[in-house]
Length: 342
Image (cartoon, rainbow, N blue to C red):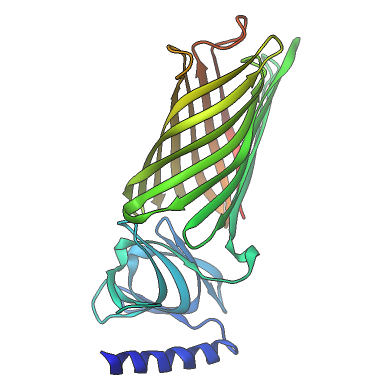
């Protein structure tokens, strides 16, 4: 085994020197015997992004690959939650590869068990990911106009994920004062062994329909990825939340428990389609009997590279809002929006 390691290190160093002159030296081997050379950019949701000299950046379905040779150091996430760092080399076994790690013996992995790949890069900007989207709808009969905008920027470290986000909707109806909803903040997630994670979040929101001027939240908790494959993800989390609510009439501090579930599904036919729904249940601890909940869902299909048409739905409920005249629920549907993946 020691001789094998020496040979591997020799070729790895030689490959590193060659990379200075030609970056696109990763090779993808397909089940039909074909192969494609380029530079691996990422793997997510069964889509391997590969930069090539002739065809630009292409997406390859991961489950149609027989083996890989990736000479850049990658961050590798497995289906069972384990995270490894190293290069990926052919194993001589169909549908498998060796992950040559920074320390320890090489690990033999089935390709289908690898759910995420990203190069380990030093530059801050190369670890950023995100999206921006917007939608507009207008109903002539009722003269109702609605505009929404949301976006997210995510920074991925070795075992930490930091994200900033914003979601807003503006509704204007003839003869009625406009209503608006805003929700934004920042979150931190620490990836733990066996698909567990620790999470914290600071956020703020306002909603004229619920007569909420401002609610600021601080949340701490943890959760687990119950299902994590290249096609389906299911995460569940729970924690405690402290917030302060302000209305035009009063102000109140609250201690609440939080239960969150997130489900996402990815279908990679033509066009590529993804569906996601997040639901949260928030019972109050200092005001027994008060319950809030939020549901957000979206359906996206790609129209051309990194651009998506998007349908989205939002629902918010509070059985005991601070203002006696406030509505108990608010909802909105965007029939057609446009999203760009950064």
